[in-house]
Length: 253
Image 1: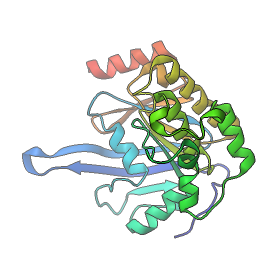
Image 2: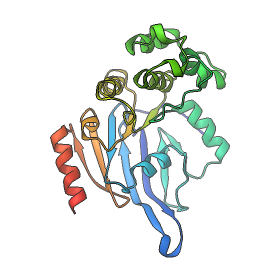
Image 3: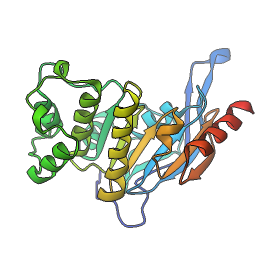
């Protein structure tokens, strides 16, 4: 499997003819129905839709954590690499090298310190972090005095900031964030959203965030809307009110 940095003009993430079905017979659910969409390099994109619209399934499938339906016309690419049809061990290796994850539940190892959690993925890959980049992220996120603390000694906001440093440390081609502010109070959530926006706008990280929150989506460069497993529209330079209005229309149709 060939891997590469993303050439200029190439979408950071792209999919064509993406389908995902759960169940059989009368219980069949078409979670994704012929989705084709591009996500630009170095941009912060929010994925939104009514409950059951397929937004989480789309992210899981793009991140290769879940397999789509078999279809010879399906394409899933991160950078210049075609991922559809690759074997599980190849996908695991690719994710480790090219993809970062931020989950609502933080997913920190409770027996490790914050600093050890931050370094864990690179360590598993046999690599050492760039100390200047690491120090920048830790300082920017206000974690300098928290690196020796275990997760239980940190607030929810601090734990999520540790998870963000961990995700950004390897400078992945794309970061997938699943409801990253869902477990945070409003102040901590706003802090996290500002950091994600800075990571995209100032450091050319590509961020894809699933959210149900119009306030969170307003920090993104673009919002992609889903309904009934299909792309229902998009919005550039979203505002809180514009997103709320768009979601209201989707839910009222």
